[in-house]
Length: 349
Image (cartoon, rainbow, N blue to C red; front, side, top):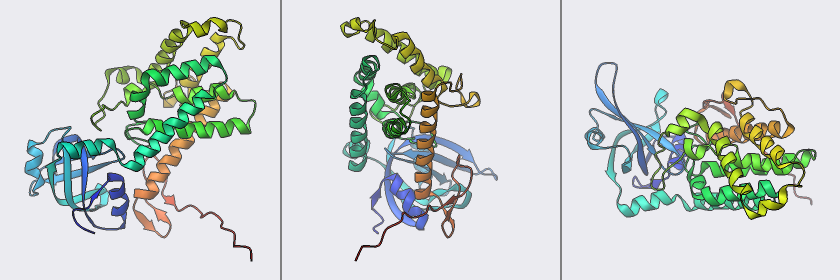
């Protein structure tokens, strides 16, 4: 491997589990903090982010990058070159790394994300649009279409979380699309579920994260939002649904809804309950626990997709402890064991 090979951060994290790796990465400085060692020596700690992942780097006082960090600021786009490896309790780190600012062309390429990521997130958003378009209840369908029309660009660059799962630009679209696939399967297995309500609940359950976990159009640094801090995404999502609902009811198409069953107010109330209860328990931030079948289904589909994403990332990046055993990644409760391979039937003779 050439030392100048430029790798996405997700690929770097995966390959570094196999041993020391000479490589270059492109990213944006998300945080930059000056700290001290136990014996009082200064060092810099920075988090570098791209469209798919983040890494933490440290510049010790005797390293060539220390002086560069003194002049650096949060938001800077960098190329970092060094020898990357897992370093005990520090996790992935680089020894004696060097850096330079990216050119405008390199920055634009980085912001666009990899072709594979663009294709995946584009397909996921198209699936969301298709699934929303198939909602039979015109009230929920119009509400969902209005949301995608007014907030589509912001939705497509929001993260599903700041850590743990889908914590990347566009991660919320990936999470919602996969949840919709799961919700459709669950609705098929349990026909008494209100499919339209469940699909709408999936779309809106994390809609408050368009503010709580919003990323700008020109970067990977997720700012903290005052509304997100003071209200949280559940409250913001409920306010958003109510505002969009009022807007939909004011349109001409809503004039014929008065006689629809179930009543429009019942539809709105049940949708709001799905948002309010989707964390499942009061201790996890929901103001109410799930009290309808659709609310329970949404909670479990949400939790399942989050856990599967965490495990997928952990298998790709965590340290090998022994044969078929990998190191625990928080918040998963224990070490990972390699999954059983799928059965492959022998070819019939």
